[in-house]
Image (spheres, helix red, strand yellow):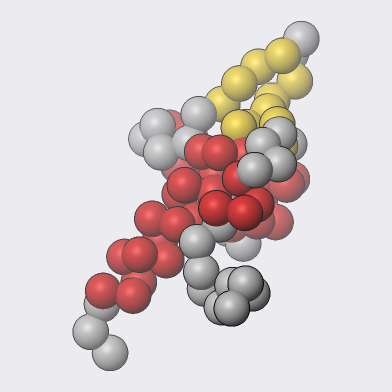
Length: 77
């Protein structure tokens, strides 16, 4: 079966690698601005500045999502 189940790896999404804005990251991760800043401060995601504008590598964001999914699936219910 070629369709990925819900909660699956973001491998397919990573094929379209791109630079994301902070608003994109907030939306994808469903976190507050402070929580995203914490991820940046703790180097869980890398901030890229291009001509003074913030961008984030989509690969970093999708790897973080995969890590969260993997961790959540190991937690006992």
